[in-house]
Amino acid sequence: MYNSKKILLLGSGELGKEVMIEAQRLGVETVAVDRYEGAPAMQVAHRSYVIDMLDPKEVRDIVEKEKPDLIVPEIEAIATSELIKLEEEGFQVIPTARAAKLTMDREGIRRLAAETLQLPTAKYEFADTYEEFEQATRNIGFPCVIKPLMSSSGKGQSVCHSKEEIEECWKIAMEGGRVQNGRVIIEEFIRFDSEITLLTVRAVNGTKFCAPIGHIQKDGDYIESWQPHQVTEGQIQEAKKIAQVITDELGGYGLFGVELFLAQDKVYFSEVSPRPHDTGLVTLVTQNLSEFALHIRAILGFPIPEITLVTPGASRPLKAIEEMNEYRVEGLEQALAVTNTQVRVFGKPVTKVGRRIAVTLSTAETVEIAKKQAKNALDYLTIKQ
Ligand SMILES: Nc1ncnc2c1ncn2[C@@H]1O[C@H](COP(=O)(O)OP(=O)(O)OP(=O)(O)O)[C@@H](O)[C@H]1O
Ligand SMILES: NCC(=O)N[C@@H]1O[C@H](COP(=O)([O-])[O-])[C@@H](O)[C@H]1O
Ligand SMILES: [Mg+2]
Image (cartoon, rainbow, N blue to C red):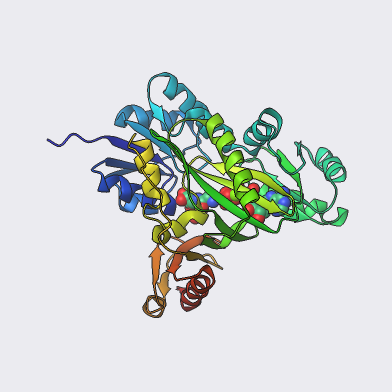
């Protein structure tokens, strides 16, 4: 019988689905886990489980039952303290259990980056209570950005412009976090010119960087990304330096999405995902190896000889504007008629306001043309009951 390696994916969204497809292309056995049934990666995995991934015992039970070669976190919200124990017992966690734990909460990664590694970041404070929160907004000044410690894709995030908005921002943060423990980060609002994701891969043959991905975010979630983003020589040197420092510190093998703000005379570190990044979906059409292929190669211990940007490209996510228990994506025929354009429909079982349902991916001779095509295709797509 064919004796392949086995991957256990914790989190089974659209990014995990592409990771699983790449794993299977190399003959890997795939097991997908998430908090709900029919998650995108479950649809392509060999087997799947629905558990509460924040429950240490439920995570341990699956790991002990499946005995995977690699445990691959796909979202932040996992019982990472249990991953630390499982790693100590000999299981391999990607990239490391410590990296998963540190990046799960904004405090861990921010303190490591700013205080231990001295990387440039926005000024920040943490608050547990409304009173501390009020004081922190005064210390940081307006506008400031408020985020729950554990959240992603902008959930629970808001910009506070004045003291009149403080109460509303606190409410948004309390309702939007993945775990309701009340603690929030208050960040200085950085007036950046642009922001990028620098995909960085740590593989057996060293650390490699992809061409910078530019993106635009709305309400803390990405609405457009493109590659390459034009940067100055000084900016890319600084960006690579920051990415090298933070990924060296986190260690292990795998792909990281290093998020950076580019301002007039400074590059700021924002955060890092120790896994493929949503803005990096564009690499499905722009690179010789997508971010998902790179992640799988790296974590399996295979070399990555060269990452080539084959063509400029752009992506646009389709986000739901209302909650629907049954839906379909319409307009694919028109969207797919757009030049050099592809669509990925994730197959999530239900929609929620703001939930990403599909993405358009376009290539062209220039980023500007690719952006137009991706937008053009997106405009054809609608979510219907
Ligand atoms: N301090 C800041 N100053 C200005 N803009 C900010 C700041 N922090 C966040 N933003 C904006 O909000 C976006 C989302 O913030 P952040 O990446 O921290 O949230 P997230 O929920 O972790 O997102 P994701 O999980 O999708 O990466 C950033 O990409 C940026 O556009
Ligand atoms: N910014 C992080 C990100 O994009 N993560 C991706 O979104 C999924 C959750 O989506 P859902 O909330 O629609 O279930 C995650 O599983 C991951 O693929
Ligand atoms: Mg982010």
